Length: 124
Image 1 (cartoon, helix red, strand yellow):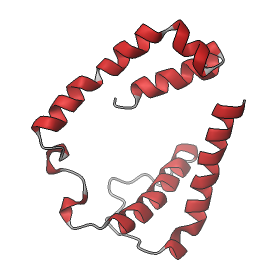
Image 2: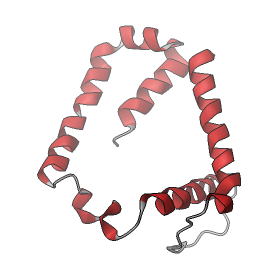
Image 3: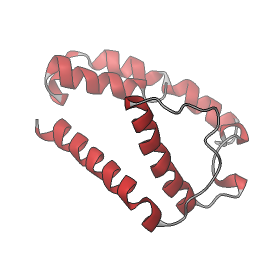
Image 4: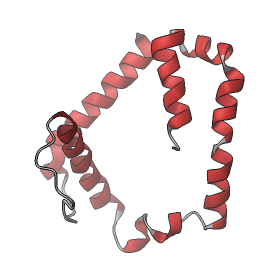
């Protein structure tokens, strides 16, 4: 739910208000109230030492580059499963990819999706 205030704002901008400025001026207090929900998250992170309870992060022996490469593969895999959900399994494994050569098609596809999103939000 961390992304909910941002997604609601983007939805409003895209489908209701027609622009960032219009959405912000029309419903500023609503968005400030939504973003106030982040104070609970900030409190939890502060009291837990910003470790997410030791469940994620780089404190488990994983370097940042293999993690980024593996996430690139995972995001593309889950986007594909969203379009054609087969095969669905409980655990997709724990293999890490440390080479940009191995994931360049996925990285290029994600960069294109990101670029298209930025273009659509800023210029349309």
